[in-house]
Image 1 (spheres, helix red, strand yellow):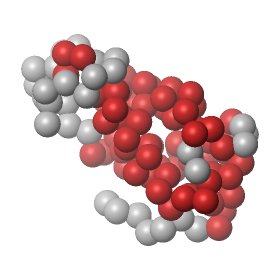
Image 2 (spheres, one colour; image 1 turned 180 degrees about the horizontal axis):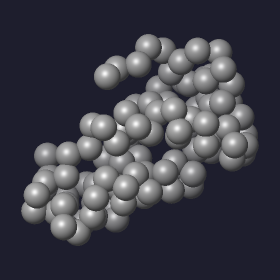
Image 3 (cartoon, helix red, strand yellow; image 1 turned 180 degrees about the vertical axis):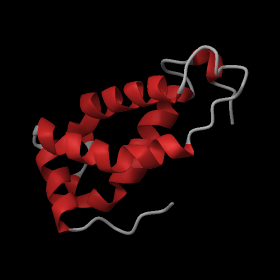
Length: 102
């Protein structure tokens, strides 16, 4: 389900998260993470090795490690950026065996 643009409170979370506020990042991940998780597709080939919770744990770690690189002026792009944290890891980072999963 595609969410509308971020509201003022969510934009504030983004600004605070980029400035280092871990609670604000937690709010963002709690709000947008379920959409990322719902869109995950783990091939049956790999489902015995990891599950959605594993993927999300790494996705959240990536967000935590790289949130300072996010431009708060582009707050509406945060959901896509969070999905990118998942995709960039899937295609060559933590799960190299999964690099060919579409």
